[in-house]
Amino acid sequence: MASGLRETVDCERLAQEGETLDRVYALADLPRLQDLLADPDGTIRARFAFQRTETGRAAATVEIEAAAHLVCQRCLSGFPYTVAARSEVEFASSPGDAATCSEADREPYLMTDGAVRLAELAEEEFLLAAPFAPSCGAPEACGRAPGLGAEEPARASETVRPFGALRDLLKENR
Image (cartoon, rainbow, N blue to C red; front, side, top):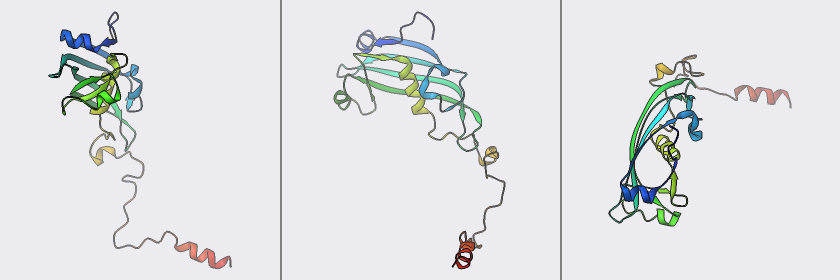
């Protein structure tokens, strides 16, 4: 993030003024993303457009773009992944307040003392947009996955008896 820019912002004031803020965050500086990333290099570009809802509550449109290297959950190698997401959030001062969001298509976002950390909001948007179990592609692209392609799968007509030898061992020990 560029120096001199405030990171914790007053949502009510920004919504009242209709402010739009642009930020760039290093992926390495966002702790909740680290388990997803194969490489912490890269950035998230975020735009926060604050406004008031029809009922007068503070809200924002959050847009992010990022080029990251995620960890494939099949072969554990890194692969490039582009994230582009947009969502509408409505700010709430308490969990009870969050339950009464004015619009169904806005997600509630809990403020702390009337403010939010923009980096956390961008990080949350990335987590919501990223795949739950990232995969680098088609099965042939994941050929390095342990056990994949190494042996031929058992044929449906073959009967597998994993404890067949156990019966013989039990007879010997009697």
